[in-house]
Length: 445
Ligand code: SF4
Ligand code: SF4
Image (tube, rainbow, N blue to C red):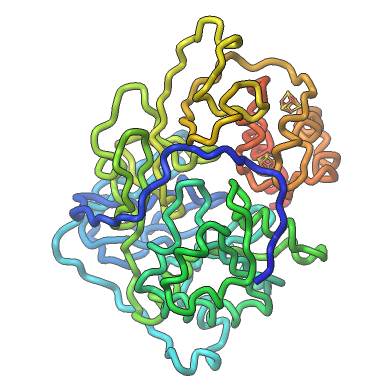
């Protein structure tokens, strides 16, 4: 195991870490496949309302590559097809029945997997709705099947501070994980498996599992993000097109190839203050309202503490989402807030006394002011885990100087959201960077 040294990121301890208990909640009445958390997809519907579907029935494909399908995570009837602005597909909702029928796909042999052609594995995963688990840098788009990636990064730690703990994900799934690693070795010559340092002790009880970990990353956010890991490891230009996959998705891929059935169970964490915080086992695409229970007024639900999307309780959780943060949305002005000691306020710039204590801090949505002009304080530069100067990049983007933005490293941005969080001028840096990258992607198409 090698250590990856990362010095910048968010080091404050936040309240809300889920405990290690696991509960299974009853089957929901509906599930959905959301197109909202799949970047760059151009969905083409393959079903209409009231069509009967089984687990594994394709619901929509990607017009850019129609072989890549997104399949039903349950058996029942297509209840609603929800569109957003300009008829952009948001989600396909399935009303579940109790039949639990599956489409049976071909299986692959565990013992002689080395002899199976790469093309066959890819075809099966595309048909079975799991090819999307592989993401390709720099855009984290669905992986290009015609490209052999120089490296595949497997992250044990999800993409949020409060993502499910790898021990919960891996318990009883070690064989599937090992099979998944064999599959990866047929797709690329270099496999990197990363873990947070503070998870290592708890992984001890998974006999021998730690041998698979190749790199250890620090415990602060977002050191375990595959984009940050790639930034630290890459040595050649070609490596910019490496792939990544989460441990949870690797297990799904392995289970699917071994059983020929689309795996529907997912582990989700719900974090909110003053609440018991277990890991929840549910079905993929479960309704948000079933997962969160009662919601206080003035609460915001997001799928990531610094960079998730904000979700409506009437919608369903997406394929890539495995945590729901319930955050107080309190926008009240604080009288003379600037001279308060701020003993419980998280602070990046060490403005408040809270920086002297190690008690976990509560984050809320209060912006404490409106957007102002950049004051060149350097907070965004000092926190960026991939050594970017977000302030320079957005100035280039705002003046339409995309080449300058690229030369400042725009494509290394992993959208962790820390620069926006740290900016005292409340500039939405991450959003601007994302739009810049998005525009560059569309220009290339
Ligand atoms: S530029 Fe901002 S969003 Fe991008 S990696 Fe750096 S801190 Fe994160
Ligand atoms: S943190 Fe905000 S104000 Fe400070 S340099 Fe960056 S963009 Fe400018």
